[in-house]
Image (cartoon, rainbow, N blue to C red; front, side, top):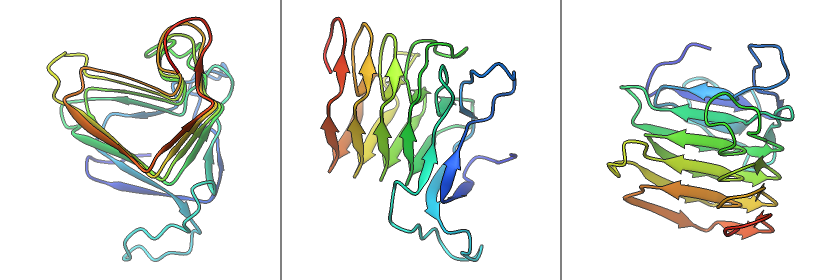
Length: 193
C-alpha cells in the first residue's frame, strides 16, 4: 500500500491480519511512518467523493494479528505529525516477538507523533512490559506529542510485568480521554492496570 502523509485509508468491514513480511508468523503489524488516517466500518459501496461515513459499528472492522504480533506500529518519520485510527476492533495483539518496541504496546506502539484513537475497541491484547493495549511515548523526551482517545473501550488488556495494563504513556504534554471505558485491564506482577 502506497500512501502519503495526509491520506485517508478507508477499510471495509471484515477481519484483517496484519502483513507478515518475514513469513515467520510474527509481525510489527501495520507499520505507519506517514501521517495517515485509518477509518474502519465501511460497507465498500461508498463513492470516493463522499467523506467517510462508516456503518457506526466499531466491531465491524477487526484487526486480529497472529500470536506474537501487534496491530499497529507507528514510528515518526520527518513528515509524521498526526495519525488517526478510527472505527476498529483491535484484538489479540501480543508484542512479545515484535522487532520494533519489543514487549511494549500489545495492540498499538506509537512514538514521536500525535495519535487520535476514536470509536475503537481495544480488547484482549498483551505486552510483557508496558502498555497491554497501547504504548505511547515521546522518545526525544521533549514532550511535543499528544494522545487523544474518544468514544473507545479498553477491555481485558494486560501486562506481564511492568505498568499500564490498558495504556502506558510517557513524556506527554497534553491529551484527553473522553467517553472511554476501561474494564478488566491488569498488570500481572507489578504496577497498575
